[in-house]
Image 1 (cartoon, rainbow, N blue to C red):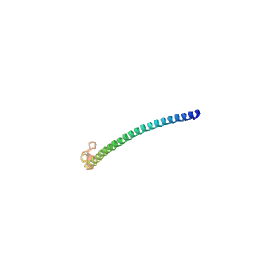
Image 2: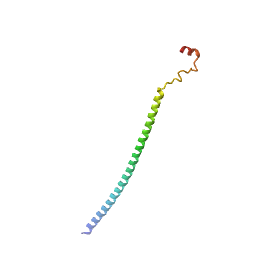
Image 3: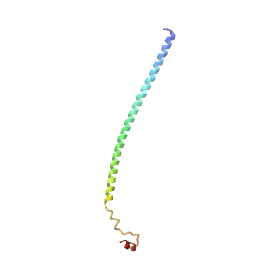
Image 4: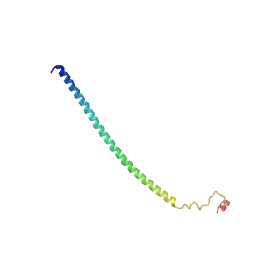
Length: 97
């Protein structure tokens, strides 16, 4: 093999090693990114579960609040119906009855 051909082959071998090094660096970066994304996905799943639980708790509170409000609105509110208004003169009240 001629010396010129040897130089070309050696240069190609060096390029091959450089490309392999870049390939393994890229693969290492991909592995790191996959691990990072997997951790982020797990974090988001946990947050989703926490949010669902919080929403269920708030829904239960709202249902209880609405039920109490409906119950309160069904009870007669006679307390204020039979009270004599204090700011009206007696002759106005006598006409109303």
